[in-house]
Image 1 (cartoon, helix red, strand yellow):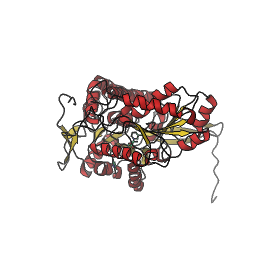
Image 2 (image 1 turned 90 degrees about the vertical axis):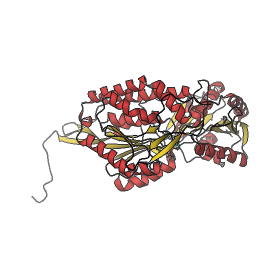
Image 3 (image 1 turned 45 degrees about the horizontal axis):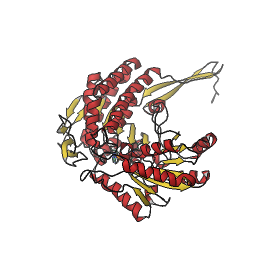
Image 4 (image 1 turned 180 degrees about the vertical axis):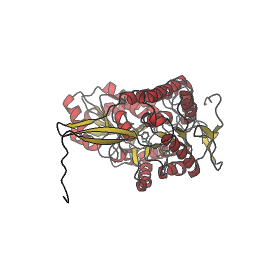
Length: 496
Ligand code: NAD
């Protein structure tokens, strides 16, 4: 069963220069929901001509429009109005997101609230930002001037689409850039609310442009466009590599937020109740379709058996069902293709000899739709594919370790390095391990709660560059230094 939101749009169009528009060649693609897997809308399929139009509109708004030239207080006022407009529509955003992505509605509501917060936060950043000055007393003084980088291309994935779109839009606009957003083709629905939100808030036409389309076509055209000096991308590592190669001839600034296979280390002295809650939430929230999912639980051998038993028992009770039911904890996976991929990893785990202790198949209560019961594999060896590759679904591996050094070695035995979670009551060890684990973000005795000022991003195959707070503004701006002498200028006199 699924509940279809009222007034679902049948057609999703681009939004370019303040106007809704189909693709130049009339091309469309079908969009389905993950419960019935039936198409519910057709979306404009952008191609190079549509990207050209959108970049031209954004370029015009950047070079000739008011947005980059507004005093920061004025920009902040509009960003705050965007936050208000998102809050006013939060139930609608959540209902559309749930319908389109299969995320449980309670979690989609949380993501809608966070989307508003993204704009409120960067509105504050816009007016509190200050620049560095460098003084060499009596000799030289230098000060930084900052300019928006130009047209920013924003390419986003299908997991938490609206939240991630706003996580890029807010800092890009706060910095004074104009933007072209290319949302993920599996989940374009919630982005269709952005034009009215931006217009209602008073954002000038052309500052925000939206082009729907297939990644290899519309996304690739945006990356290859010479009029777009910045690309902020969130998605798979393989796509990130392709984008970096395509952007290289243009020497674009790139922000790459990529995949993960994050470890959750549980030492014997940890608060096991809390560690169990956090480990389960960390991998099964957002349907496990979460870049920072703690998808490898590493447990010290003396508590390993106890932890596996607890995880299995709790996983069996996790409620898998209709995304729109507020009691649901895991909804439907986004797309049949992705669902098949996740199931193939379950099969790989079985074939490679991991011990399935919970889930592993479609729950009996859900005969159709992309549903998978919360799945726990124990005795997972580091050479197994389910330990090494990102599954991006409700599947977790549990592996024992003996000593702290083994725990660190196992945690780092992956191409990825996005997040890590450490559970221990030994303070010194917690900090030691946090320093040794190769991850962009580590949480000690806690789960994934963000402070939007902090650097977000990964090491190794999980990405390049950081987003969040001043890091985002750095990305969407150019810092330039101006030098001023404080004493008589002495210059070597060549040819004198
Ligand atoms: P994806 O790489 O398939 O697609 C992401 C976006 O890129 C989509 O909009 C897609 O249309 C576009 N795209 C695809 N090929 C392209 C190309 N050649 N040129 C330009 N654009 C192209 O990723 P996905 O399957 O949508 O998302 C899941 C992945 O995203 C997972 O690997 C997950 O870990 C990652 N992710 C990372 C973070 C993070 O912050 N590090 C956050 C969320 C998701």
